[in-house]
Each structure stands twice: as C-alpha cells, then as structure tokens.
Length: 432
Image 1: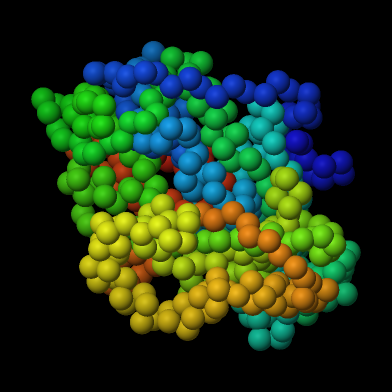
Image 2: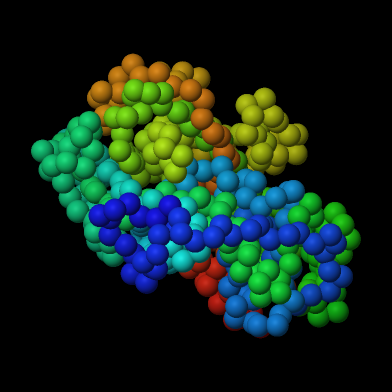
C-alpha cells in the first residue's frame, strides 16, 4: 500500500504504487548453519536483517549468515508492535534516536515504495488536553524542530478538528510524516536482499555464547558451532544475556515490559482517522495510551506497560524462572519500581480494566467515552535498565572482541533500521 492520494511522498521514493509491484518472497532458511563464514548476524528481526543487508552490500562476496532462534523472522518485537513509523519528535536533540529516526523514516518509506512493502503515511496528532500540558507540548515542538522533523506544525484548539474531526484539546502538534508499515514484510524484504547477494538465513538456531578462537569468533549455537571473522548481535530481548556471555559488562540489563493493546469495536473505530497520541510523561520512555489505525484498518488503544515475568510473556500466565530471577536480582529494577510506582499503579489499572484505557483515550477523543473494545495484540518491549535505575533512553551499542552488540534498541529501532544498520556497520569497520 503506497501513500494515500494527496499525501506528501518522501524524497527519493519511487512514484510507483506498491500495489503494482510483485510481493517479495521470504528468504529460504538453509538447513544447517555454516561451519565457517566471514560475518554472522545474530537475530533475524528487522534490525538484524537490516544489518546483514548493509554488511553484505558493503562487502560484496563476503560470506554472511544470519542466525535466528525462532522458526521464522520477526517473531518478537518486529512483529508485535503497532507498526508505527515515528518521525523523530520525542527524542533529545543530538541523541542517536533523534538522528537515526529522522534519517531512517525517510529511507524506510522510500524502500517500502521501491520494494512494494505495505505502508501508509497517515500522520499523527499529539494532543494537549489541558493547559498544564502545554509546556511539555512546547518542548516536543522544540525537539521536533531541532531534529528537522518534516512538516511538523503547531495547531490551535480550533484547528485540531480539520485533522481529526473528533479530537479535542487546547493545542496539538501535527506530524504528517508519521505512518504505519508492515515491519515483518520490511524485514523479509531486507532478507531477500541478503539472499540475492549470497547471504544465508538459518532459523531454529539459538545462539548460546561466543568465544574468541584463533583470531576469530567461535559462535556456539543449538546446531553446532560457527567460526566467523566478526559478528553483530541484534538479539533484542536477549541482547544483554548474549553480550555478557561474550565478555561485555552486565550494565545495562534488559527488563521486559509487556504491552497489550485493545481494539476499538465499530462504530467507535470510525471516529479515529489515523494516530492520536497524548503528551507523554517526560520521565518515562513510554508514550502513554494512544490511538493507532493500523494497516488492517483496526484502531488500537494502548499499549499498557507492565513489568513482565518472562521475556516472551505474550500470554499473561507465562512466567520463566530465569527471566524473573534476573529481573528481580538486578538492583535497577527495584529503583525503577520505587521511582515510578504511581505510573505502575496506573498501568496495572489499565491492564485490568479496559474501561480505564478507553477513558484515557476519551480525554483526546471525547466521543469514545463508553466505547466497546476487544482484546488486541500484545508484545514485549526490551527496555534496558541501568544498575542505578535509569531507564536507558537511547540506542546502546557495545563492542567485544570481534563483535558488536546492540544492547538497547526499542522503538524507534524499526523505523530507524536502515540508518541504525549503517551506524553498526561503521562501528564494525572501525573495529577492524
């Protein structure tokens, strides 16, 4: 799906509509990982696939292998999000997130247009519903301008309805270049580029550890050992565990946060055109309960943000002793809970009572009051937490012998995937 008629197109994007392009096949996984290769990428999510693509395009002829623990790609954060392409409003000027999000969104739209990956540039409103939120809205505007977010503009109260007819507030920011995309399809397209250049994808291959051996890296996995000259670890929810196993510091630790959405039932869903967000709490890396019309046309409310008892706790009852033990033994966990217990109470209430989520959304779209919902998708955010209780709010990349580790890459990592892959490849080149 290309940008809707009348929407501005990103520079460099093809003028063809994606619907006219052939769908890209998923790359076929090889039966057995190679015993030796030049480069290994651990993790077949959108960041891992983007990194593999960048590496093999830079080094034609290199033997590149992607090792993925699951049976298919995009099983975790890539495939369990709302699919929003962020424009770069929220992030501190000068941060990696700020720079890479703006670059990455522009490049992602152009790539999707070229490859026929479904997307829609539908826009987003960030709505201040009361006077006390105006200061934070102004700070977001300042950040957006500093980050060169395209098309960003401030709306008065009487201008909001022209963008979202049912939204109400004292002021708002409109970001026309925010959109939604099928991130799994994008990851598969990256993987198809890797396969076309001679790279291989190996699913059902769970990496356990990696150790230097004879000037190379011996990557031990569930199907044997692969010797590689260099490796990049893009392991998402398990990134800290593998980094430590390779000799990286324990700080920061991944703490899993479960985010669940609700789906608005009709006729309430018809009240929302695109994406409507609240002004977020600046002390938290989460964006608050917001409304997103996804590619399937559903309107989602959420997500919640609850500390999870397992790194794959997509179902509420799932708990894993090791995951929970690592979370509870980390000093930063308790400092986060003490510092943000009020926010935790609100999140628990929203998770237990769908009507609370609806009430939050109705602050921005009053006509939603009392709307009926159905359970929506759930995902786990891999949130890096420092030993001191800091919720790490930027991408973190560490280096060990012969390897690069992506230690913190939550949203907007998918939006930034092509730009983030360049940064990682640069770091790998610098390491020799």
